[in-house]
Length: 415
Image 1 (cartoon, rainbow, N blue to C red):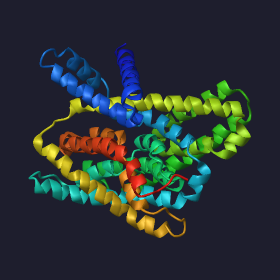
Image 2 (image 1 turned 135 degrees about the vertical axis):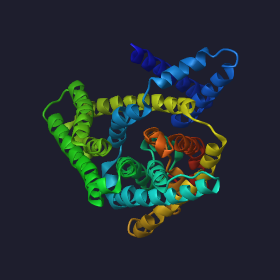
Image 3 (image 1 turned 180 degrees about the horizontal axis):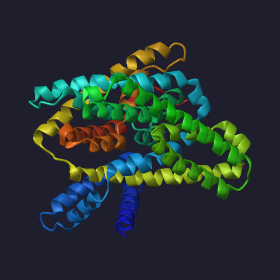
Image 4 (image 1 turned 60 degrees about the horizontal axis):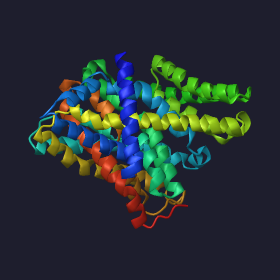
């Protein structure tokens, strides 16, 4: 019953804050919900000096929710499938090579650059932290969050050629980023003799390629099932079953569920499946169902992000570290994009200032917080959780609010 009550409260708060945002504040949902929830939590803190009933209730809710499990093991598969379902597969195919390089090479380079930068920044302010833990932080903060990116880019007015790069990268680098994080986590948790280079490469290959193959199989199987019937109710249920059972299978096989769901979503939402396996009525119902589920989970997720401030150990040194690492993370992302952009920009006719827009438009979000919550105390969990939270909030509120203005300033007109 506790979980039903907590879920009901979260849905109620999501509905209430969503109403306030749409009716009065009129910000993109991702930004508005995060901002309102943070203000609400700060208000609850202030009220607690008079009556701590609300603060105790909010802390009880957070204490009962394992944010890492809720996001990575449950919500993420649904959100990535929904995002991929509404991504234009034909346009993504045209940009497949830069997207692939951004999501692999870019994330790896960013991981090491941020890890090195963080190590020296922490040393500068008197915090001695092992380099491998800084590298672990680099892995969790490097992937851009498709959940945050998709919601904001729709209103930013980015050119379509640029938008598909950012969206495609965010869909795939999320799964790759989680694999890199788990790999470095294993290194940090094990002795050198117990964790060889071959073991690292094998884990990475199995997670990534296993996830891609499973996703392709699930997408093909779903296509075959949809093609053989014409009943929109059952077809919607089939797509839901694809995500739920696919996530369980991926977990059991120890392959990347996020990557599997992205590939499955792209196949199910692709032109071939839509034209050959779904009637216009079925397409409409499938799209509307996943759009509604996407919005519901997003609202709950960003309300949770705002409430996560209650679990932070807000020491002055930690806050200073977070503020100093914001520009480090942005510079490292810019540098990690330079080589891929320069390789492909002439062949694929990149729009001007692609690197700058992708740097500022590559938002960090809930996935980074979930991974930071998965760190152990010996890995400086409290420190990196505060730094991650500060970067994520800056990313959503500052970058998210200004990316549209940056695009306008650079005179990038929507195609």
